[in-house]
Image (cartoon, rainbow, N blue to C red; front, side, top):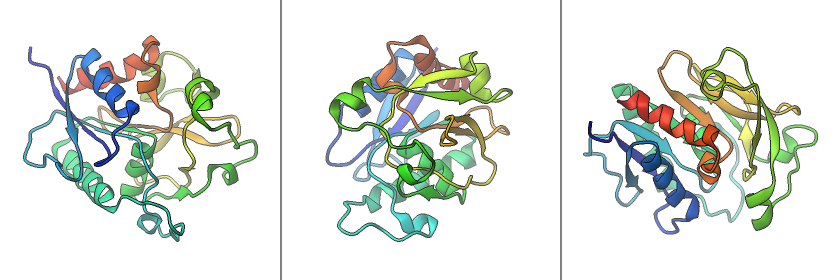
Length: 224
């Protein structure tokens, strides 16, 4: 059976190791990755599933907040991902959002974000820097009865932490499916769809663990 084509969004100018790992995770999960950028959005390509990758902060006016001065927002990528999410809704494609991608899925459904995750809850200041991005782990509670809980077959998960923002109000049709002890949302999903999942952590950076490989393989199996 041909590999399902999985389009994944990435920055236009500075692709990094995480986006290469998304492509690897898609391939390991049985899919064929297709990189999509603002310069080459591939709107005319037929895809079987969509991954919205990580990256810079979303432009805050998308959820009625003021932008930070001198921050390098990527307006073209914002517009490209919003359009792809709309197309995915129209075609009923499986969707996985990673970090910024989960935030974009939420904002595209009318939800909002905390501009600073440290202000979202107590004990929400996490180590940052290169070594922390690689090695630091925190715990998230997987909510019983959700697709993510069925997928992972666990109610507790150790995850990485690379995000500076967090989901505040939920977008239309989305529910929480993973949350930290301090209340910070770590994953959302749409229970009305076969696979529509946004995770605040980076599973592509932990594909040495079967649980995180399983997120990609389950999405790709849904695409089949």
